Image 1 (tube, rainbow, N blue to C red):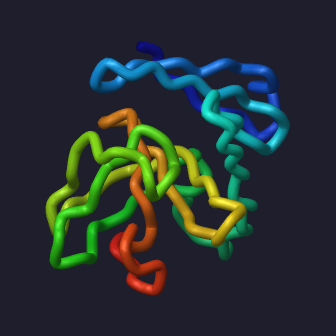
Image 2 (tube, rainbow, N blue to C red):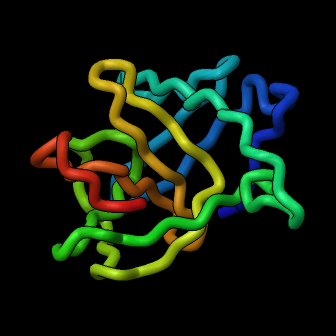
Length: 136
C-alpha cells in the first residue's frame, strides 16, 4: 500500500492504482483528468475553484480540504467513487476528516472526496437521496 497525491501538472498520467478490499481486487488508471476503473467506470476530477484571497494560507493550497459529517446518520466510506459500491467502513455523525482529492460522477454530478486515512471515498450527498448533503 502506498499513499500518493496527484499533482496539478498532470504528472500522474498513466499511473495505475491497485488495491484489494474484502478479497476483491480493484484497479484504476489515471488518464488525463479521468480515473478509469477496471470494471468500466470512468470518473472525472472536479474542477478546482479559485479561493478568495486570505491572510493565512488556505487549506485548499496544500491540496487537502477539511470536512464534517453533517448528517444525523453514519456515512459510508466506499472503495471507489460509486454510490453502488459496497461500503467498507463508516464515519459517525459529527466526524471531522481531511480529503486530498475530489471526483465527480459524470452521470449525475455527485461529488466524492478521497479519505487517505481510510483509503476510501466519501460521498458529498446521501447515497439514497442526492438532494441530501451529508458532508460539508
